[in-house]
Image (cartoon, rainbow, N blue to C red; front, side):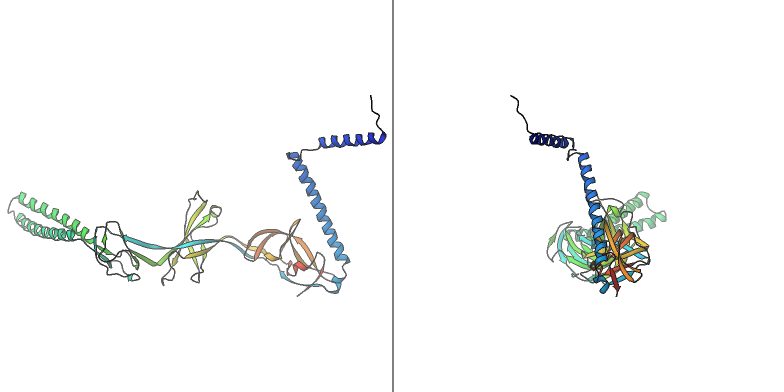
Length: 383
């Protein structure tokens, strides 16, 4: 049996059917088209909100009669082109260019340690003596054999020059002389290895052995460091590879020592470390007073950007709203001075300043103090 629908029920059915049909026709919100439509809708809403904000600011400024009674006091900066520099700050480690750990070249017992830690030494200064009785005996034997062979050879040579004696006797004497000479030189080298000398001018930084202690060949004995020339090594991200060159000046600071100076870059690696995508640089420093110690941390300030005719404002004077970054300018008009909102395009920032790439020019007056107490079009007074 058919069921009769009343008019109100028929209308509700029609509305429900239309709503279902409309929903089925809409874009899937998870699809690309759906997200694009949503973005367009939100952008339209954002523009409408910003327009409403601007309109309200203008209406408030027009209706606010208190501004005429007491203009907001501000401070300004008159803009002109100036030099703007951007620096990259790195932390490096100080190392000595001549930091040598001397190892034993022969085995034996430490006979004497003439040097002391902290002592300044010259190249060739005896630091440690290693006792090796076998080498000493061999040296005496080799020396005696060499001296005898030398005397014999000289006599045979003199006779041979006078055509006296046989050639074989002369050649045997010559061979014995050369053989013993070579043997003596070898043993002399072995003996010299028992006397450890300073290979450079510097300071004895560490003595790793004690008198009477037995040491094996290759054991570390003493460290000598030359502190007159030190270098700082640091790593820089590969994005700065084209921004720094050998010879560029960098600012060096060592907070622990209270040192601040400029020094040139002496080495720029052209090889990128694949682990952290960085490359190595080195900076040499003179250190005649020895104040700078190895392994001290140093800060390097490396300039990677410079503009000799930049428009620069204090970074704190830049504000931001839904439309972007802006500053307030002090603009003269008939009857006084007002604050004017000006949107800008920022460049790099360093320290307390920011370079402005678009929106400002030389001669503009930027409000630097009181900018957060004014509105667009509001009357102001200059301190």
